[in-house]
Amino acid sequence: MTKKQIVTSSFLLSFVAGFLLWAVNPATSEGLTGPQKPRSRPSEPRPSEIPEHIFYGEVFSLLTKLKNTGDYGRRAALSDEEVALLERIARECESDVTEQDRKAEAFSEAFRQKLPKSKPANRPLPVPAELTEFQEARDAIVLRHRDRLRRALGEDAFRRFAEAAKSIVNVTLEPIS
Image 1 (cartoon, rainbow, N blue to C red):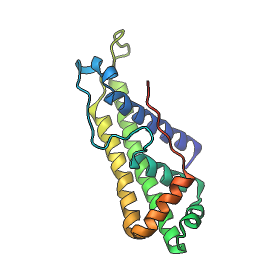
Image 2: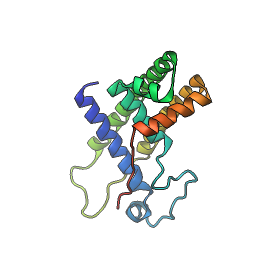
Image 3: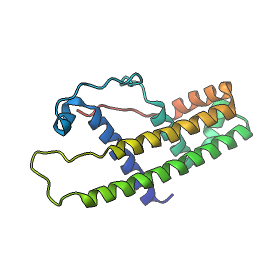
């Protein structure tokens, strides 16, 4: 993956994540469709908790970019076969996520082309529902690969891997204010 692709993927992920955080904040979304009730989601993370699709997405992405599966394998006491499996699943996840990001980027570009050249003052632009669908599909890709890894390693080895990953990868989320 080239630097340009990494930067583009990071930008797109940041854009979509920022949009989703913005979209679920009732204080900022009132201008779109009028006042809205706060949405409650049963899996809404507390500030100290990272949603699994974000955590494992970062883990798989870093594994493919840094090629450091051996570090995870040593910390989690994985066999060579398990490390090879981890590497393969991380690569496949990253490939699937990259393809999903390409689709979202193409949609975003087409959407921007359709927008009027000037927007009315103090009025937010409409946000297409497809962006949320692209993000949900992206999240599902990561979770599907996490589940594949869990099944392939077995619960005990997967638990050790997850603990090793948490000690190696530091992901934090901060609310946008």
